[in-house]
Amino acid sequence: MTSWALGGSTVPPFMLAATRAALVLIPMGVFLFRPLPNQFLRLLFVCFCVGPLHLGLLYTGLQTAPASGASIISQALIPMATLLSVVWLKEQIGWKRSLAILGALIGVVVMIYEPGALSFDIGLIYILCAYAALAVGTVAIRRVRDVDWRVYVAWTAVVVLLIGSGASLLFETNHVKVWSVDKVPLLIAATYAAISVSIIAHGQYFRLLQTYAVNLVVPLNIMVTVFASILGVLLLGEVLYPRYLVGAVLILPCVWFIARRGTPASAESNE
Image (tube, rainbow, N blue to C red; front, side, top):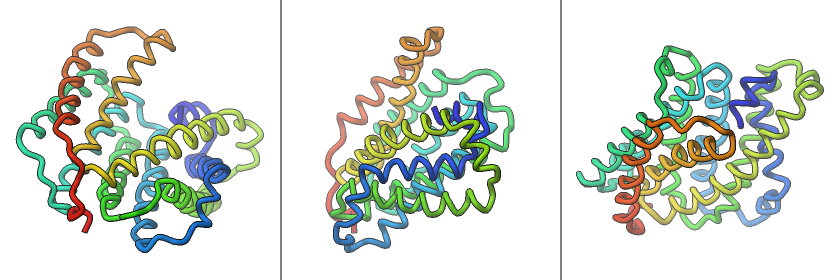
């Protein structure tokens, strides 16, 4: 949805991010009035990494990067976040889970790889940096304790709105023209991202990362590729390529193994 809005219209990335954040605050703004968490600065650091830094780089990259190449690059989140969790949080992975993560990553590449998809495009560099920022924020979440996920979503929206609006005013032009010409794709993409991604997906992602180890939660993102491929076939009439089936056969048992071995992270890993 985001790629469609940015690639097929004049919608600039920071304007889209700021609009998305403003829509998030309509239902979630009430949670800003709760007492500030004890670890508020840590929370703001997480909000900055997963909010304006990640979204700004991601939306900039999606303006030119091919969708299939961007999907492959996005999987870099898993090894980056996993390695950071080992170094920063001293989490233990084990060779069996490492093999399961590797097998799932191979399945993703098989499922979504298209010849020429990874030809050089500066947009892919931006996307890689975007997921590096998300990896840092993902690991940092484990050090933010006793914060309601709704408070996290609300403050992330505030940070995105402030920085995204400022960046849009400084680096982007023709805001009135964009609103008059491409208001529909802007609002559709921003509303979808605000509700489905920021409030539902990111909110529950934050909650899970406060409970479970990073190296358990992050690999489950691989299932997004499986669901996206299935929905593309069922709803959009896309071709069911053999690589979809081969990739799913690799991904599903690996993700099941990762999830089956998962246990709640100890409190000490948050310290």
